[in-house]
Image 1 (tube, one colour):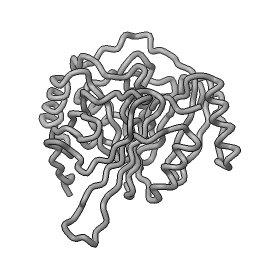
Image 2 (cartoon, one colour):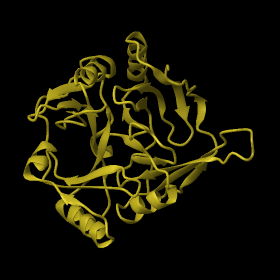
Image 3 (spheres, one colour):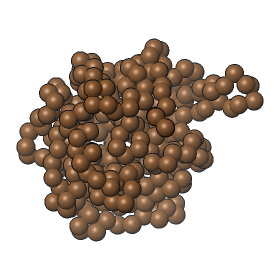
Image 4 (cartoon, helix red, strand yellow):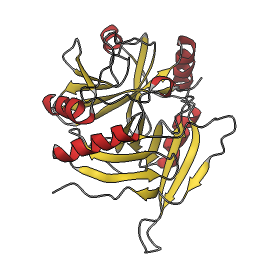
Length: 297
């Protein structure tokens, strides 16, 4: 009775055109038109992994978490409602729009919106990257991961573990200042039931866009390098240079999206065997690279 993987990410945009350009021309995602007028961005055989919806702001809306079957879905929803979590059943129109069989929505203790769903649909046009990306690592590992802002870290960790079935992968503790009075930054990395190193991370800091970053994993380092070249050539702000994380081994860079949050584009992430995995504590963020730069004023 646990979330299996990150199924999709919903994003609000004042204008869909910047996302169409960023997604297709720069990152190499396949675009599709949703029946309700939203923009779908694809990384595989699913109808979408990103839903870009017209609205009055540029920001993250919600993460869509996939349950493997109807029984898992209903058991998880029952557990959450028994614990007093307010969940709203999806309407017939919303369920259809998410290409699901069942859907509920709610928020975590810090107000981060979430959706739980079950049922898989396929996009019957074969996935073809407009930029020749050889492919994205999805399938049983889901869409990737999200990092959410969490002012009350331990309360949110308990919510996702006890009610949604996530478990610990890594706890990263980073010294942010030579001043010993400045506390360490603690980031918690949680895995779903799939073998992606983490489908969710929680960071105790406010983020105006509602999302620290989300991640897509490409099949090959050359795909990542070419995407980085396209980001630079197109004038997008590269938030972090190429580097390798200490905990999940991902080689990646970060780029600012039209939604005000970052997209991590990486490859070669770990896929642990949870039956033998021992949660780790990382004291550095990276083994090399990942030089960060603030966005222009």
